[in-house]
Length: 251
Image (cartoon, rainbow, N blue to C red; front, side, top):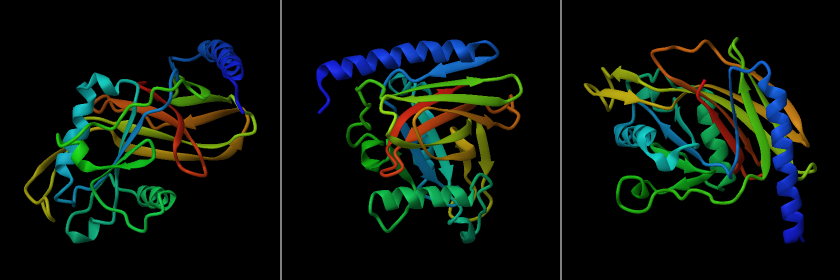
């Protein structure tokens, strides 16, 4: 059983390691961020071919100006299983379909749907997002892992991960999201609509299961000044899919 004294020692060690990691990454980085609290990860599964999705897209865009979501990793995964109904979503990728199916499997569900909001690895009722209930709650516990992420001038990013429990298994992924995309839909369920998208996932790269500390590297594509981006790094449990730690970096 973990005692209060154990928890205090672990927190102190993580704080010390965080300082060391920050110093080691700072020398040649152009931007840097680290996790200071428990993670908050909001995923939207959506499609330009789904007539029910535009309100969810609009809600997700509103989070840019919502201070209660500062520091959260927010991601819009466009799925491709609507593409055969008349409109091919240019942001959709098969790996996003696979990710949504994996989340359903972790939750012991046999079905996937759009629009779907996933809050910290759990399905979030849509009624809670559009004024019919409370918003997905933000976690209040301190960080369980120390994670520092830094960006370099050549679009290369580094992450240093230090778990409090060196025997705990963890996995991770990187995403690059972009804001300010728009599409004039000319076919399918949303024919004639002009859709705006923010937090659109443009790159998604997974990291296999690890144990103990690790230093990881990720190469992002060139940034597009017309579409502000965020590079996100999320550590999660390979058993449940629940995020353990998450760091967004606007760089």
